[in-house]
Structures are given as C-alpha cells and as structure tokens.
Length: 297
Image (cartoon, rainbow, N blue to C red; front, side):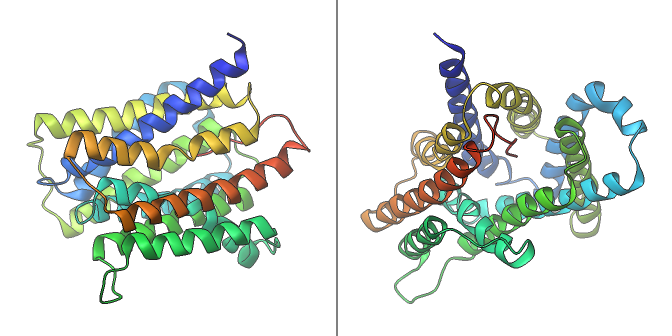
C-alpha cells in the first residue's frame, strides 16, 4: 500500500472520528451543562498539546498571539452554537448543517478578503441552500431552534477559517491550534461561571466523552491530519472530509436510533453535493499551485 493511499485512509478515519462526536456530544450535554462540558473537553485537549508546544508559547510575540486568540473566539462560537444546538436537534441534522461552513466560506471571503467567488462556489451555495430548506424548514415555514443554532455554528466556523487565512499566516499550525484551544477553554470557563452552576461532580460517561472528543478528536487528530495532508492532494482531502456529515448521520442512526424522512434525506443529499462542488473546485485551483494541502481545523 503506497503512502498516498495510507494518507487517504487516515483522512477517512479522521472524518469518521469527527462524525462520531455529534451523537456523543449530544448524549453528554443531555443532563450536563454545555459550557462546563466545553471547558472540560478543551482543557483536556490543551493539556495533551502543551508538552509539545509550551516552548513555542514562551517565544510568541504579542501580535501573533492576539491573532491566534481572536481566531479562537470564532472557534469557541462555533462549538458553543453547535453544542447548544445538539440539545435540540439530531446528530444527523447537526452534521449536515455544520458542513455548510464549506459553502459559506466563499461568501465571507468575498465580503472580508475581497476574493471573488467562482461559479462552482456559487453553485455549491445554491444547492446547499435548497438542501438546508428541505432539511430544516417545517410546514409552517419556520425552522427549529436547534437547527438555527447549528446554522449559526456553521457561520462561526466559516468566519474562523477566513480569520485564520487573514491574520495568522506567521504562526505554525501546532501553536495556532493550541492558542485557539486555550481561547475556547477561557471563554467557556467565563460563560460557565456567569450562566451556569459549575460542578466538579462529573458523571463517568461525560468524562469519557470529554476525554475522547478532547484528546482523540482534537489533539491526536491534529497530528494525524498534519501527517496525512503532506502525502496526498488538497482535492482528496476536501472530498474525503465531505464524508463527515454522512458519518454523523450513520452514528446517529446506529447509536441513537435517529431517522430522517425522505424530504430530509433529499436535503442532506443536496447539502453534500453543494459541499463537494464548492470544496473540490477551490482545492483543485490550489492544487495547481502547490502539492501540499493546508491544514483544516
């Protein structure tokens, strides 16, 4: 088996791990406060990374440190909206709606970075918008609150990607990731202290999920992703990561007995098609300029 196939399989494993976390997090926050869970999850992730980057932290200059923390606030907003939304919607729906960040990025790039979106990006946006309507809009033309919260998460993750591209080119991937995680820990702790009653009585199941999502799905995946993306093309990476919401729906069905109707499945299909069209075109253009793909959070 050559290295590119190994890398593609590693990226597929990452998409599977990320897809599995939706139903896990939904279960964890069913009876446990959202921001306490986020603080715990990302504290464990940060603790896993610090042995590898604490010296880089000491050498950081003020400007890149502030840029990293700023992007971390968008990162926090994304996870906060997603986790709050998971309390009120299914893991399957959350997976596909979160994936809309892929088609939102070109629109934000147009507004913030003055980068004109390609025709395929606009086509992806159109398909995904129709898909979102089928997936989330009810008979009275309103959307469930949980779906709206996860949609805000998609916008936050898209803003996070644009912010990374604009402000943090001078920071290495590992340090940037650790800075963003630190920002999530701090913001989660502050919101928890203000809006919730922090408890150190953590159920075993919640601790296990926080450990998996923090250490495995965040810290360990970072290393695996960095290795894999050096051995495959950006196009392969983008298309493989598009399977994440499919895995979210699969785990929702297997572990939580979630079912989607025909209309919702059609919406999921259109969202996935929009993601593939928008993402593949952007990475195909990038592949002409460089063989190594950029890291994706």
